[in-house]
Length: 371
Image (cartoon, one colour):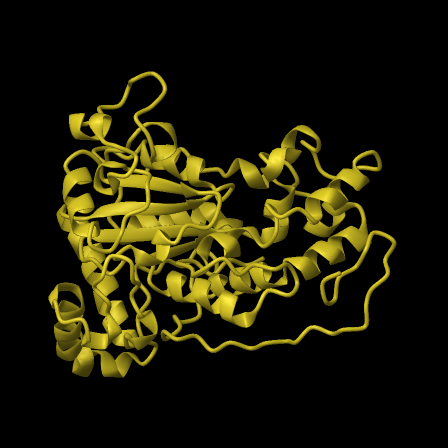
């Protein structure tokens, strides 16, 4: 049994969980309320920005274009990752500002890191409505089921190992520029779905000036109850827990596929171990999210997408972007939906690192939601 774990009879072991505190590597954004728009996160020391502007610009250019491997710890080999902890906050802000500016002027592409059940399909649907903002077919990842989306010949003929001609596949560091150059000819927004860990997420050059990256983060307990459950459990438990499905939900709660779901996708290496997942494992996921241009919190997805669109000058339609995921259970708390306090507390303990990651990411989202 994992430390701090609870079985379905409510018994626990005596080991206690450490209560780790983490300081952000990159400067935190100003305090925002729900619906407040933020184009890009910058240093809270506003009076220093002008003095650092020129230095930040030079450093950002060096990070993006310099071939020297030792500059700021940026590793240029295909199988290595960017040491984001070595980048100063102002440099990172400058990089993200440049990415946004390049999208507005028409040279950059948006790539969504779509963790399964994190509103990727809904977001794609909204982006497909934006005039002149071209998107691929199914979930903005593929050609489409009815051949209603243009697909370049190079992509049709590409092998599974040809990363730069695969719109939804992982992109290595050295392929990033070519990938952007190729796909930006056809689309302005694309998505790659990640149902599990993949090492190349950390290897992609997310600092590239013509790549705007984004990710939607979701409450892990809500995701646990969402439809399309992993490991074949959806056919067994398509709805919220009931008296008849409690045993199956316990099985699902202990499954490998459900274990710290988003954290497992985003961490630097396979390291998720239920309630025993280490702080180092969590930190690897934080390092990756620090490199992403935009973080959106699904708990106020409408406002987040609106702010995202405003920052990039996207002409979203006003017919309303409603996340279907938050309407079915509008009058029930997540705990109430579990219908079993012991199961709820067990999942909360087993997924504790995933929950920590979500809580950390909320304070870095483009809109600070009022939950």
